[in-house]
Structures are given as structure tokens and as C-alpha cells.
Image (cartoon, rainbow, N blue to C red; front, side):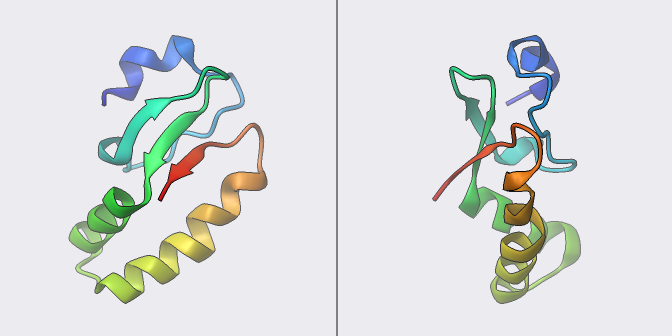
Length: 77
């Protein structure tokens, strides 16, 4: 998904995760981006040469923690 093409449809407080455009699979009627958890893991493993365990730890601790900021985003598991 090309986030720039749908930016005008998103809530102004929606969080857009840097480097994870390929993990965005859609958006909600409230204007929040929907990210696929497995695709996020795949991207972090490729970008950083991490194991699945390292990517899971990073996403769970650093990305999912952002869900409470602003309007946030949605994660599809």
C-alpha cells in the first residue's frame, strides 16, 4: 500500500510507522492505518538481519507500545 496516496483519508493523529509501508494492509473507517503483524516481523528481520525472536521482541516492546499515543493504528494478527 502506498500510504502517501491515502494520507488525505487518514486521521490527522493517526500514526504512520516509518519504514513499514509494506506492512500496511489498509485503513479503518476512522482513518487509522492497519498493519499486518507478520509483515512487520518480516520487514524488521530483513532490514536488520534479525531472527524472528529478535523481531518479535522489538515489535512487541517498541511498536505495539505506540498504540496508546495519538489516535494510533491497528495491528492485524
